Image (tube, rainbow, N blue to C red):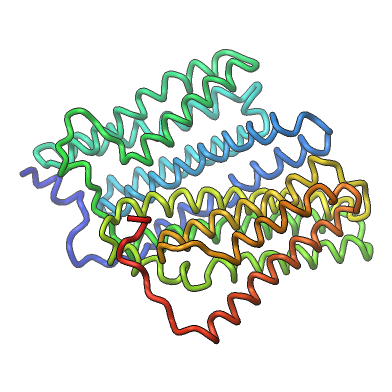
Length: 399
């Protein structure tokens, strides 16, 4: 077995908590999520086609999420104290920063910069890791990751060269390939069944998931704070800013309650940890997308608290919290193997209120979301006092 491979892999007994390297890496993504939020705000305020704008923004957001989650798995599987791993983290930071700078015109003039940076990060990672694992069975698994990113690189780069709806179509194909491969843990024809089972440090990965959710809340604070400082102060804008802060606190509380705290233990005791990791990934994608939408919605509310609520604005203002609640319900299912009634009820309440929100100003729509989230937080508090502590279900992700 290669000594280089042994040195690269994480050692038994190493600390399972993320290091400062990973937290340093996360800083770029506050800026990246903020650029994604700003892009959607600009599209919505210009009264463009909301579904197309939302789809384009989701595509760009998913690219950042895939880059972040794959990098998190790299620092989970490999020793972050090794120079090669640290170099890969810095390269990922640079790539994410270049992508973020290109976001405003990613579907236009800066498409090649966005796609080129994304593809380069994934291929360079493979070119460093695969040769370093020579002689170790983990090399086959790492080669599978490179294989899938090499396949998706074709529609990414070709899409960046062409223009118009063809670019959107090719990039949609590329991100579907990347997300599907990730959810299947990058299967490859040369990998044996034992090599398709990814070792996971429960404490590490669950902590990274929670940290990325905090990054999304950081984007919400940055977006709403910037919007408030850029507007003329008035009673309406002050109320909107106050509601944005209350919403941020409620999102944090609802996220953290029980299932969010017990995710590490749930991964450790799960019969099929890979299934739980997969469901937790999907859940955090939905929650982060929801928080980004909440940030977009509050920038609109702060800018025009008593304006006319368009259907597009109502969709963002209510759709963000709904995405968050659906994702949070998935976390509940992953940890306890049951549905979360309060989160499902909150989602249905927001969906039921949606048709009437065009009749009230944006500030009233924000109040509606706060009332629903506060109701869920209150339900959690009552449940915590009246019920014995619940432990994770070993069946994990619905096994």
